[in-house]
Image 1 (cartoon, rainbow over the protein chains, first blue to last red):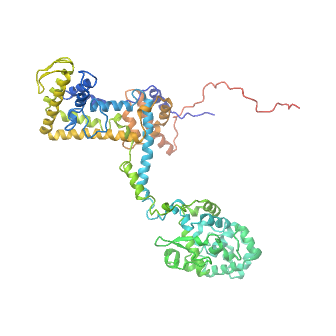
Image 2 (tube, chains in turn brown, cyan):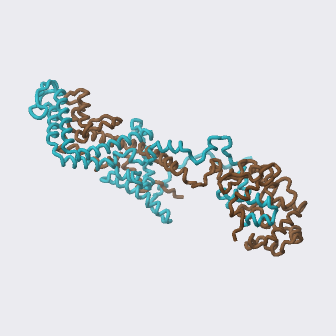
Length: 326
Length: 298
């Protein structure tokens, strides 16, 4: 097996120079600009005088050297190659251009480019994390639009918006096996959805079909339960009501069979109709089931331990959930 | 969708309402329609909430104003780039100011100031007398005898400052421009030093490190991908020594990073990576046997 190098010929070429401290230098135009200032007829001697004085020529006192290096620093530092007096945090230097030059060379490692790359890597890392912090925080309070409710919901992907007792609700959900088709939440609570899920997973047994027919369910509806053409809009309310009646009659062994097919292990399911009653489906967590109303206020779905449904939801749920428009 | 008004005609109204409320609530869970009930149930059962963290639960926005203020104070709310931290070497923000300084000075008559600086150089070089004096400056605003070069320089420095004050008065526009150029560079340099402290960059700490360079070389194409102003591509291009092939290869690597990305996205291959399998395999070590003897010993 041929193993491919992660280094390309161009990287190898660059590396051959870089590992010999060549290939990266202080920008040439910048160097030229400093030279132009330092050798100008107007100010070149200023730079020379500072360099001489700072290097010990003339045996100047410390105070005089400092005065030499700060010529014009309160009026026009460019005419004295000095650092403006307001930039007190900058290090003292034998001239501002000298500071620029020595700093630039220090950045490039003063002949050891491996020192430059260490600084470069640190700078790059700092830039990455700092920019992430700054841009994230700028977007943090806008990226959710007006969807933010609380931190708990944000962190849990709105699971806690449904039930803050996630452990108990989760256990109740686990006990439901495959009862609910999460792709079909719009039809949650309809008998059709439960029978379709049953038909999809294990099929409708003859005993169940018989109960359905005897309850008034159209035979075609039963035969076509798994058809994509069979939806809540194609099955009449009358038929679904008959389905519900059938569900109330499915008990005993037939119910046990249904529960086994769907994988439901929830206790106290007495008839198949209990499979569309959230109070029965979530025995350990129904009291903490919640929904955000149209005013973005969380409301409990049940108001007491007996499973009384919160009737104020009739006014506060979104209208698209309450009323058919067509 | 079966709305409440229809569902309540099919099943008991209170159950219909509970189902519609529950479905409405569950539909708010991100990507729930892509999950099966068992996998969703398992996730719900294992989720950890912020229960008991009263300060976190009291937040009315993803981050508090205090948090916003803190990060915005870090760098004035501005993003940074490599040039902000190590910019001098690139000349970005400096070269133009320096050349503008020279050209602006050239529009002014600073003969007197230049003469003082010339006298300073001569004085320091002992033209008018030795370090220990006496020193006698023959002409100019600081002309006269001095005990030492130091004394003469003190007078010359004072003369230079006086002359600069005069020039500021005579050339208010030019000197204002010069201060703008100079302050811009000083500000940027201060900013760099400040950011270096924050980025824990201390050149005195660095030792020679070939492994650091090896890592840098391997990252060169990646650096080419950041083409923002002041970003890694602009930075490295500015300091690449284009007079030698190694410097040109650095720039070529930066471009290679972009090209590789473009080609990869298009599904086009390259011949960019030589094999690392040696032409002559190195001798293999004799290791302990991993198979039983055959025929088996009894």
